[in-house]
Amino acid sequence: MPYSPSSNSTMEKSNTTLRRRLTTAAVVILRIVIGATFILSGWAKAIDPWGTVYKITEYLDVWDMDVPRALVTSFTFLLSAWEFVWGALLLAGTYRRVSVISLLLCMAGMLPLSLYIAIASPVADCGCFGDLLIVSNTGTFIKNVIITAALIYLLAHNTRVRQLYTTHTQWIVGGVLTFYILLIALIGYNIQPLVDFRRFSPGTSLLTDESEGEEGDDEAEAVYSFIYTRDGLTRSFTADQLPDSTWTFVERKLESGSENIDDGLTVTVDGEDILPDILMPDGDTPLAEQFIVTIPQPYDVDLSFTNLINDLNDYIAERGGTLTAFIAGDSAAIDRWMDISMASYDIYRVEPNLIKELARGTSALVYLREGTVVWKRTLSSIDPAETGRHAASRLDETLDPAPGKMLRYINWSLAGLLLLIWLFDLLLPREKATATSPSGPSASPVSSTESTDK
Image 1 (cartoon, helix red, strand yellow):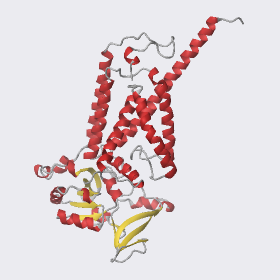
Image 2 (cartoon, helix red, strand yellow):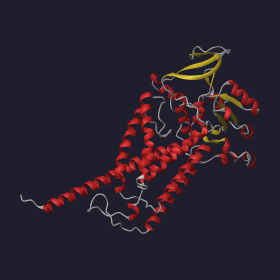
Image 3 (cartoon, rainbow, N blue to C red):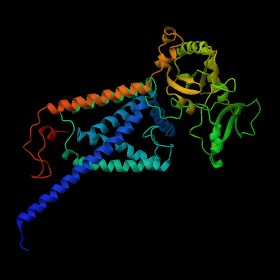
Image 4 (cartoon, helix red, strand yellow):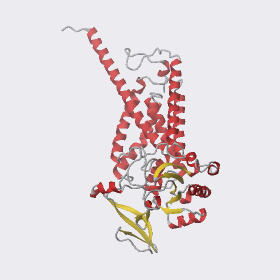
């Protein structure tokens, strides 16, 4: 068959067009997948900043590093905002070079860290997605390898695909996204997370359903040891060999089996869970209303909160309920708190991790109705004047932060702003550039604003 230059040229153009379309499809897919991954990671960290602070502190404790909590908190805000904002900009194809480079800088630290935790397993999980999604250490490393490879591909090809926002408005989009994620984090840090992914979220009963445990497998039954101390000596005892009253209870440890994720909160006194006695003083039905004050670090609490707690105790007592404090610490810390606060309410020692899971913050208030969590918030977010400003029948409603309603309002505001910016962007003139895209003469021209995008 004779050689035909025109047919060869047509084939080359067809191959070029196919490669360009495949590249475009790959870039769009990677933008969505990688961008959404960073959005989810940053949002999960920001929605529960205290959880991220606890996870970073866990790393620091393993490495025997003493870092001020203010620095850990600042890094938490920075990391969550960095991942969320640059992930969202990548998904929108905005700041097409800078967004990829910024996320690669993030992976330059995350990839070696995930390799370390996959090998050494210093922590149970990396905490990449907070309590929203638990990923194994090995799974985290594999995920980070895939993300890094995808970002390297985008570094070479991301600018070949159009962006959602032009350079005229992309800086506004970045500012709106930054404000949004920092607002979410500030609310989560100062009040409570707007979405609670932990076991004791609102709507959850703190009472254990014993019938569920009887239906489970025997091999899943949790076996505990109980740590006691006396005269400087610390020993571990089994449930059927508990010591006499001269020993002081320290903590309970899980030795085998697994704790049911649906279990209620555990308050252990002398090796026995007394939470049902706290929630159901008459032994049959839980109290109609209760306040629980959580203090995971008694030496870090603002002592001015003692007056607020006493006022809350008086308020709930008028309604026929009780206020109980759950404190983490040794007997000296609890005695100190009782002396300083002049508490007329019951105080119990509870494991620190359980307190942190029940409510975030250095001190918080949890409102229960018939043993079920209704709402929770930090004591620092409560105006002391509120206890005397409203009638007893309305105070519990006034203190409810209504996180679901708040989050819906913030999310709809963000969506509306981004839509308005996009519509405004469509009205701006888009001049055609004289240069063509890197794909060759057959490629479609790009706008001048896109050709200068960084």
